[in-house]
Each structure stands twice: as C-alpha cells, then as structure tokens.
Length: 116
Image (tube, rainbow, N blue to C red):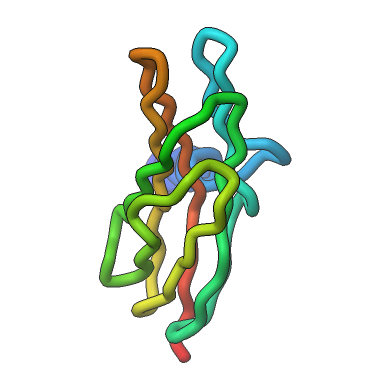
C-alpha cells in the first residue's frame, strides 16, 4: 500500500509539473512572458510553430530540455514564430527566456512526441 501511495503522489507531482494552464506565464516586476500554444503533441518528423508574447521588447532565446526529442529555433524576436521540429519519441520541455531591464523571464511548455 505504501508503494502505491508513493506512486500516486509521484504521478500527481509529474502531472502538475507537466500540465498547462490556460495561460502559462512568467511575471516579474510588471513584465509578462507567455507561450502559445501552452503544450504540444507531435509525431516524429512533424513540425509546428510556437510563439512568445510579452509586455517587454527584446529577443527570445529558446531551448529544449531534450534535443533528441524536439528542437526549436534558438533566437527569434518577440511575437515572432519559432519553428519546432519533432526529432524522436519522448517528452521534453521547450524553454523561452527573455532578458530585459536587467531582469530575466523564463517560461516553458511541455512537448510530447510519438513515433512516426
């Protein structure tokens, strides 16, 4: 029973970390950063577009937590689309970072890629 309860708690924590709200956003000192869409599900070989919206001006630096699963254009302007490419099956996080007025804002979205 204890093992089952631990697995349930771990699953709930993972779901919470990977779930997306209607507006996943980072906020700092009145600056706001949000990503659209809030999550992606792709098939290996597919591509999609992802966009950052912000109250700030500047350049968005994108990164992937697992480039074997998904890659993304590394640097784009705010509100400009970034191309996402599904490389292989698995899960990853796409992270968007903008630095403005001495502050760094970061937000991320989960990506799941299935086999093709």
